[in-house]
Length: 215
Image (tube, rainbow, N blue to C red):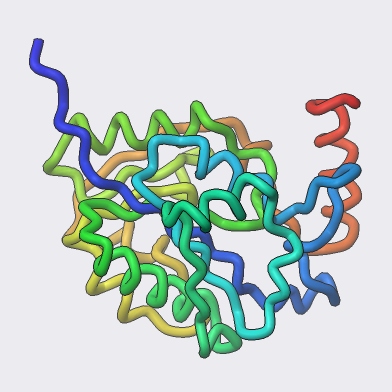
């Protein structure tokens, strides 16, 4: 049996959100002792088979939330910080910044990840990349939440122009309903899609995280 060709997939880690509903920068919140919210999914991405990871941040980010492993990967050149100068206009602008940087790296696929999803894991990312490599005809491979496509997801080059043309807070999800693109979803447990957008949700996430990762 001939194995699938391993394509060059670059991670675009979206960490430039305004955190308006939280009232503070979400990425710097401590979900456990010494563990910052923004660094959890990033650690998983950097420990995966991604070729590299582009961290998209807003201007003025202190980057105090970066785990030590990420700092080491930045020094090695496998992890890159990309500042989105118009991040205040919405997620689409951060995505555009990430796509531009990934194209410059010669990416064949772009995995989009969100900085406020603390429960994604390595097997989840591995499954997405394996599926993307198995079928070169797919425009995307997305994580599925009860039939709804969500990040983490991988987009092939055919989707990049449309994704880069989005405006405001529109994410790439709207593209998956288009008949122009072919792809599939890999269903996952709902917990993995939990994002942190309120103080109450953060407290809930802290309890779940402590149960999954006991001291």
